[in-house]
Amino acid sequence: MGSYSIKDLERLSGIKAHTIRIWEKRYGLIHPERTSTNIRTYCDSELKKLLNISILNRNGLKVSKIAQLDNNEILALVNKLTTDTNNADSQLESLYIALIDLDESMFDKVLSRAIIQMGFEKMVTDLLYPFFYRIGIMWQTGTITPAQEHFISNLVRQKLIVAIDSVVSTTDPGIASFTLYLPEKEMHELGLLFMHYLLKKRGFRVLYLGAVLPVESLKAIHKLKPSDYIVTSIVGSMPGEEVNYYLNKVSAEFPDKIILATGQQVESFTSDKENLVVLPSITNFIDYIEKIS
Image 1 (spheres, one colour):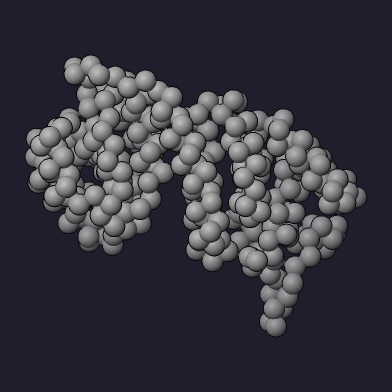
Image 2 (cartoon, helix red, strand yellow):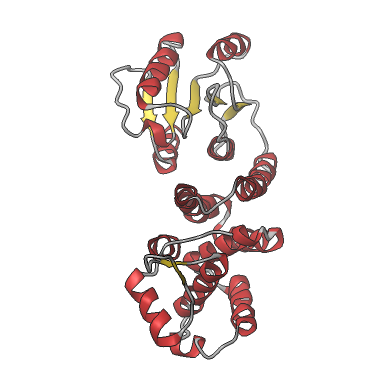
C-alpha cells in the first residue's frame, strides 16, 4: 500500500492541492487519513479515485455530478473513456491506475488504443515518456515497489521489441550505421530500445548490443563490425564526475567515430571533443537523426 502526501497527489494527478482540499471538504470525494501531527496522507485507493475523477472531469463531467456516483458507476464511465478518448492526460492517468493495480489488460488496452490514435512513435514520446517521468516521482516518494516498476518496464519492453521487429532492416552498405549500447553499470534499457526503433524506422543500419557492456568489449566488437556512430545512454548509473570521465574516455577510444551521448545524466555535461555530441532528451536525439536522414 502506498502512502501519499497531498503534494504527491498534486504531482501525480496534475490537480492542485487547493482543489483537492475543496473536493474533499465540499463533496467528500476522497478521504485522507491523518498523522499524529494532523497531516493528510492518502492510500492507493484514494489516488486511484482521484485519477478517475480527474479523467471524468477533464472529459466534461462536473465534479458535483461525479460526487453523486458510486465507485462502480465511476469505474464504468472511466473504462468507457479509456477506450474512446484520445485525450493524452486521461490515457496517462489510466496507465497510473494500471500500474497501481498491476493490471496488464488495462495497461495493454490503453497503449494499444494510443498506438492506433497517435502511431507508435508519438505514443512513446507523448505518453510513455511523461508516464515514466512521473514514475520517477513515485520512486522518489517511495510509493512504487520494484515489482511494480519491473511489471511496467517488461510490458513496455515487449511493445518496443515487437515494434523493432516489425521494421525491415536495411543491408545497404552506403547507409549510415549506428552501434547502440549501455555502459557497465547502466541497466535502464527502454530508452536505448526506443532509439533502436527510431533509427531502424528511418532506414539506418543498427547494431544493438544492449546493457552492461564494458568499453573493452565495445572496442573488440567495433573491430569486427565498425559503425559510423556510437550511441550510449546514461540515466542513473554514474555520479557527475564519473560521467565526465567516462564520456571523455569513450571519445578518446574512438576518435574517428561520432559518439552520441544521451540520457538524463548527460544534461549538465559539456564537451570540447569534436566527436562527442550530447543529446540529453529523446527530442534532441530525434532532431539530430532527422538531419542525417
